Length: 230
Length: 230
DNA sequence: GATAGTTTCATACAACTGTTTGAATTGCAA
DNA sequence: TTGCAATTCAAACAGTTGTATGAAACTATC
Image 1 (cartoon, rainbow over the protein chains, first blue to last red):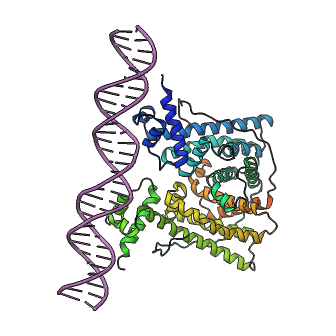
Image 2: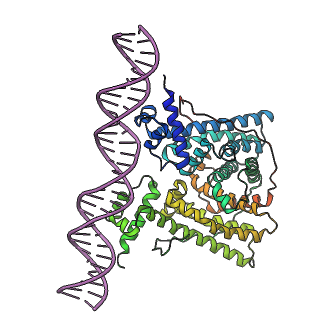
Image 3: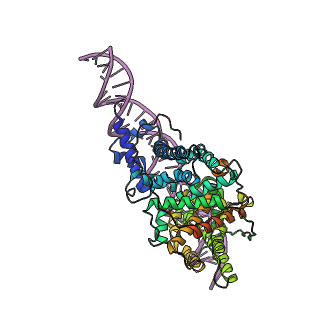
């Protein structure tokens, strides 16, 4: 029961390296070198490389989910068991965005790791993400209480778009900064959260989707490319 | 100048395998076996594995971008040089969504490949995606003409969210189906396009983002997990 | 039909991967 | 101290990977 030191050293080193260089570029040998432990220690303590990655991701995920549910519970208590829709969405996207964005979070290993996990999506992480459905259902339930009239499908779409905007902002924050030449402030996390929430609320409140006709796309075969520009 | 057969066989086999099993799981030996060509043919015709992947992705990307610009041009011509905002966004997200979603596209190798590329994001593809900024600027320019009063930052956010919703729908279409228990129809592509466009328009038309205070998140260290559930 | 250039092929290479092994070391309880 | 389990360690394992090589087969031109 003694040495958690090796275990935590591996976890810390792995998270740092994965955050900095991605899952594809980091080997177990890199990790044990960074942690100053023996190569076999990883398999001894975690069983396999994938289980190490899974444990890293689960730890951070659990923390985020706990935060989400906490914020949701608080909002529901304040509203007497029925939280307003914007508060629900705030509880959903706030923790993730605050965890991964912002100037103080720039150097946070945990944040950079979660961004990496969001971008690269290796098998052990994908497996865990698939179990997230149950967690999301709690938010659907809260949304149903907040908007009793709304069709269920509309609620799902609203939640889906809220996650879409927050995750895509995390994944592509550098591209958005470059595209907007700095005009989009990715450091003002609170403003981003509010922006995502307000658009999501609009999506939930607005949408009677109209039907329009669009042309269908022809298939494109592969030819020889003379110059590979985009 | 003779044998393009080997070349195209490799491209087709690679696209099919990558689409089905992902980039991480497919080796050059798998590809040449599927294509019935010699192992060395890949390096002979493409130089390296990464260049093969890049060529696959560039071909499909170019096709999508061409389609986008086509639809944009058509909309601008119809509006006398100034397309309405919903038509611009329609031109932006329509081709991608139509290319990757829908019942007829289910078996399309190209579609499944692009979904894979959107999920896994290997280095050669990331490099190409980074050059997409110039292409997106053309849509920003069109949006600026459509909404002359709007702040530039708002336009960037609107475009960003439109891409967020379409890409996330493609990436997570299975999870959304499962979460909603089939209540969200992922086969009605036109409806999805209209939904994404209308939410994006609302985001662009609505947003005076209000300022709210939110609590900051404490850092969570790694402990020992007794049970790895999410 | 000889020649030159292109394409295919079998094979080897060199490096790297996660994992295992069995012996050494450590820590703790009796 | 002795004994036993937990931990660390160096080393090797077994497999896979993308790439390179040099000879063979093909193709088109003269």
